[in-house]
Length: 511
Image (cartoon, rainbow, N blue to C red; front, side):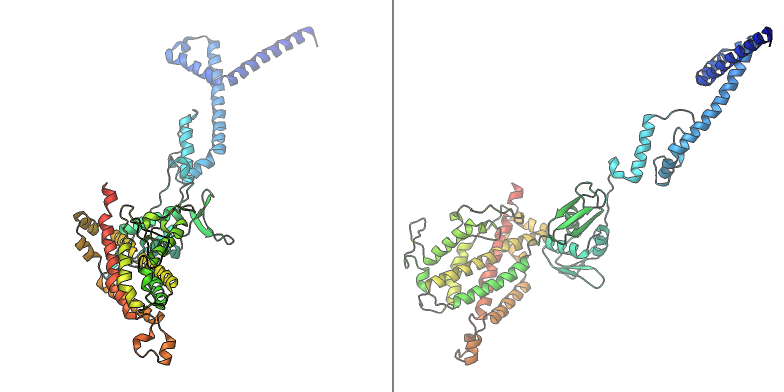
């Protein structure tokens, strides 16, 4: 090859190198050159009067930028499908915030903003797990549908539907409901709940809210998607959340104050204590001060009788082990109770703290003057200690039964709050006595204790050999005596406690 040919080839190579450099600049800064190229065109028609070389360069730039723009749009479209397409589809399908409108930057070449991305994230969170966005889902239950059946029963018609909505066993809900209301009830053939007593729908709503807080709601995430199960080894019930996997123990259902059940049980205790006391003679020295020199004296200096001494000493022992911290126990010597040796128990607050009543002085007088002469044979068999111990047992049972009127009064007050409140503010004790008295129930109680005394107190040996002669001698305690005890003393004293309690019931609220 000649020297001229080599020189020509070198010039052509140099020219090609410059063209490649210009092309790489066009692709690398295509956006800026595009904006710069548009500015002169917007200012005027100077581009039309330029030189031919400048026009050729402008044509090359516009061609390169248009090609680059097409490639960029294709690349941006591919990135949108790969990174956001699935999320956007799921967001639209699951109730995303934007719905079918799509992303705000879709169809343009601009970048997204931080606020738009934040809205996007919160929309997805709200669709999948709204609790994480601070918007807690509220569970709405239908209100209880309550109706009256007769004059003394209430029908809860949609009880089973509410149990299914809470995903709880109806027997567990029923147990809690009856315990809180302090009554009894059962399901009829159409799965309606029949409850004894008259209750408003608001009462059922309050109890159901309490049940949800204790046995349905998760304390961690406040979700109601929970399960209630019992550990087979420890017999402890656990509440397990299906959302956050948290678990906690739940306490057994408290029976509340079942006044009727307790009163019926106390009937048995009283009858058996009277039967035990009736096996001894009257033994008058047990009840006479100074007849037996016991080491105990009243504040006025007079010696206690044996009964008073034994009763006080029994309360001293029982008081140390916190018997009289229980709200259903009342001491005969409350001012002389000793300090506790056991830590006190915190009981559920059922009674009003300002309305405590203690009429044990009347209970003691009634027992000594009216009941004891009826159940104990006259005379003295010198069983003074045994007589006094059985007297203490009978007195404590009678005191508990009579002072349980405070719980009965509280239950009646909660059922008929408006009526009792009006009478209490008027200080109308006679009207309160009339409102709380149910003579039909009293007659049933009198007949029940008479039958119990006849059953428990039969002296089968005496009736078989005929030594008793009359029919009354076949009983250890005559049923008529027990029936008269309830009719003339136990129930009137119980109603006296109820009236005194109710008259003080609002003292704490008004102060």
